[in-house]
Image (cartoon, rainbow, N blue to C red; front, side, top):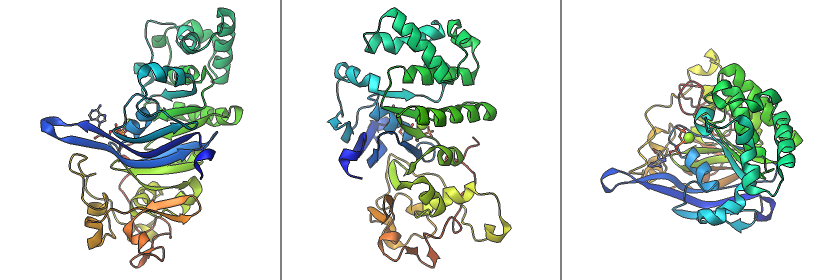
Length: 348
Ligand SMILES: Nc1ncnc2c1ncn2[C@@H]1O[C@H](COP(=O)(O)OP(=O)(O)OP(=O)(O)O)[C@@H](O)[C@H]1O
Ligand SMILES: [Mg+2]
């Protein structure tokens, strides 16, 4: 993808936080990816892998330690809040917890109207009309606009958050686990809504989730993160059908239903994600990887293009022939597996 094709270009983004006792938490490590206009990019990875930090950096809620965030061709990295305010209407975020995201003292109507007051010149009548239009867009009963957040269900509240985020017709919206805190039945409704929105609007989305089924359903392309680094990215079906990185293979294999024919050959993804305070010297996944060789523990793999947009960072792939040892690494998720069907190892 050439830079001109994308609405967002994240280039070599790193974000470190001070840890205790003079240590550094390396939350995001040299991450590069792009989002095209109107595209839904799914981002998956275990808990603590840096997904939210990337999302927050994009919308200006976290300042990058290094690297660039280019939005519509403009470098927006480290813009002071005052300057970022002008971009807010085009760049929005929806958080995981709709209860915490809404002011309980304001009526739903006022909440959805707020970005219109702040970022547009619309008069009261136009704002009122737009709020009603938004309620319709997110399938929220207009009668709920006069209620307070505590009178609404979790699913309804998340629709309010989405309506508020869409109010000013943003070009990109970051959705940080928007369905994770909702009941399963409610979750399906929100996903359906996002899929409908995507056909009704031309909005691009970064959809962060640890639930692979959800990501597969909704995303055009996916990015797989491990310890703040991208290990694989590509068109969703290509990655799901032919995962190249052993970590992606493990995640996807665990996502498949149990199959006695292949279960014996599966590698269980053991151990914990390493500490982001002391990063491994070589490949971050080497300590848990079933096909790691000696070089993996001291050599950082770079991204290798496998096919078109499909890329992975693994020394074993770089070795050539698209194979890891005896196991064909493009042969699907049969070689390795994890223990749960979510990237974080927790139940959805
Ligand atoms: N404000 C902060 N101060 C210090 N450390 C932070 C801060 N925010 C995030 N971190 C650390 O950065 C790392 C990445 O966290 P992040 O929340 O981005 O991960 P995540 O992939 O979103 O995880 P989850 O799936 O649990 O939401 C973690 O080690 C986390 O503890
Ligand atoms: Mg998170």
